[in-house]
Amino acid sequence: MPRVLLFLPWLLGALSVAAQDQPPRDWFHLDFRDNGFYGVSSYKAYQQLLKNKKPQKTVIVAVLDSGVDFDHEDLKDVMWTNPGEIPGNGKDDDHNGYVDDIHGWNFIGGKDGRNVDHEQLELTRLYLHYSGKFKNADPAHLSRRDKKEYERYQAIRKEFEKARADAEANQKRFEDLLDALTELQKAFGKDDFSYKDLPPIHPKHPMASVVIDMLKNAPSVSALRGRLERAYDYYSKNVNYYYNPDYQVRAIVGDDYANSYERYYGNNDAKGPDPSHGTHVAGIIAAKRNNGIGMDGIADHVRIMSVRVVPDGDERDKDVANGIIYAVDNGARIINMSFGKPYAWDKDVVDKAVRYAEKHGVLIVHAAMNDSKNIDEQVVYPNDRYRRRGLFGPRYARNFMNVGALSWKKGEDAIATFSNYGKKNVDVFAPGVAIYSTTPNDTYASYNGTSMATPVTAGIAAVLMEYFPRLSAKQVKQIIMDSAVPLHHQVRKTDTHELAPMTELCRTGGVVNLYRAIQLAEKY
Image 1 (tube, rainbow, N blue to C red):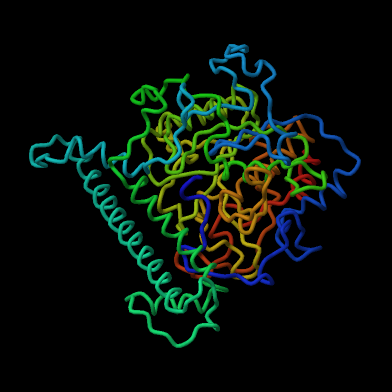
Image 2: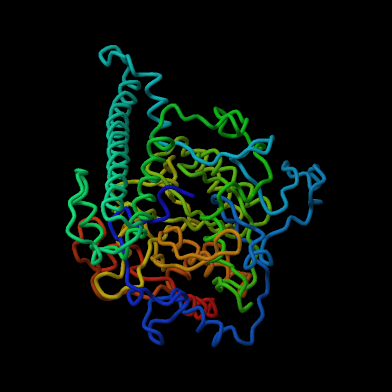
């Protein structure tokens, strides 16, 4: 699943959360005035505003992600099926350049059926790129242009080496904690117990006291072990894949990676090896409503197109650009992009794809990311600012929305602790904590992240396009922003923890709301 957009609370030491501290599973559908939660009032909208209305159009929503389990019990009826393709005949029946693209396309797979699963981060790829050019360079003999690149290389090298060292240290730390926990179990003579059951024993492991302190805040040893194992696995991925210069998997795809504008590569496995993240996103948008199983998505008359561009690591700009173009060319009206990264390899190719979507009236809904940062100060990619300036200054994509994550908590803690924010670069906030949705193999789970807030917003956009088909993508974006519910109380900034008005955290100072959006759309 995408590295940064699924927030993992165990990394911050949240070892247990009491059941009474959890919101209702469907809290993101609820209404603040009626139910006390800043949900998007979707139940209320369907019961009151849409009760006797029929959608005028089926809207295709492309989920650019890790893949979608299109056989899921709550998704199989809402998946996009390419009307021009005959499944399994090995031919490009609709002549769109992609063979047997039944439910979408996979830009990180090879013709032989293999798939990219884990990947490096863009920071690692840039480190390798610049190291090949500047590792042994003498800055005194570089041209002015090369000196600028050399300075960037030095900054990237410093960040990479620190990140790699931190990952190795954390991997070792959690390995030691697991060893200490095993020794504690042996000393007590039981596999599972709680802190209150623990007699006064003194294991020799140097991390034993740390483990015992951690056990105080965990319901049991088995629960603590699960948390520690997940943390160890995460940092192992950092070491083995994300920050590993020797890990090279792009050859699986078989494309000419140096050619950012190459279009036709990949395979038709739109599910991929681990579609957990994409399946969760798809369910939030469009899980079958009112079928008595699982959960309800926001929108009721959409089709989900799965476009696989995101591995477990950082996505590549070439794949993102092609994913956008594929979605546009195959009829998507909305593109959900629950991913992002702090570095870009080729921003121009993504900018051109975003501009292509804008030209064709397609709305892009993007996650603000989960780094607890002000992205007015620290850039994330992709974004709505085109790299090439216009005659009168910077140019911006008018079909691009950036979404921050809202918690179910109220007052000062309304903003998810992990969410990025930005007065200029985040448009709205949406529910993104404890969001219950579909996961592979007919299962369900609650995830946290701006990854979840983004499809909540994309779902609202889809409803507007279903019931008000004459609205343009730009109008839908404006309606969602203008109808956002303002939070008048101060909230806590996620980086400095200072209190500030909501208008300091996003452009609208508010939270998306389907009920209000429909009311406003009716006036257009």
